[in-house]
Image 1: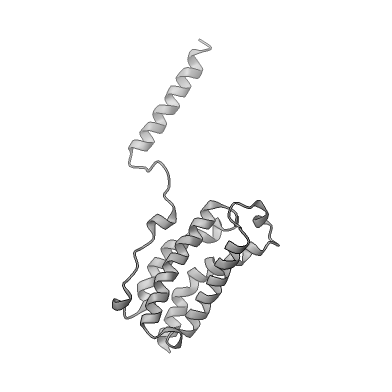
Image 2 (image 1 turned 120 degrees about the vertical axis):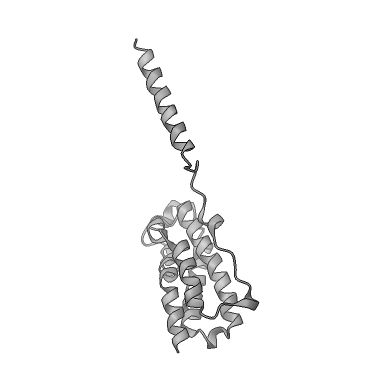
Length: 161
């Protein structure tokens, strides 16, 4: 009897896990980079970049501020990669629509985001527990995570002027 209960409990646990997996739930959460929206061709840049990129920026930055409370974590690194992939697309579209002269505030914000990305890479922040110290140079990533959440407003402002 003492051996049957643990075996039965393990069997029920496995059955429950199998049922949860068979109900359409993925085995593991894909990284944000695999869900990154496709680039818009620069030749057909949308009329209003703010409208076009708002949903993309919201999607890739969702949860990034929380994930990057631990800059060394893989979720934070994945978020930064996904955000910067959308920024690459946005930069191409900004260039197709007049560049920094047409989008001065947005291009300044993007430059800050690029600098933060470079600092993150230069300091080898991913996987480094010292990165999580609030005094480390890795906390510049806030320019990426917050920048992504406010960039659609910045684009709107540039498009109004």
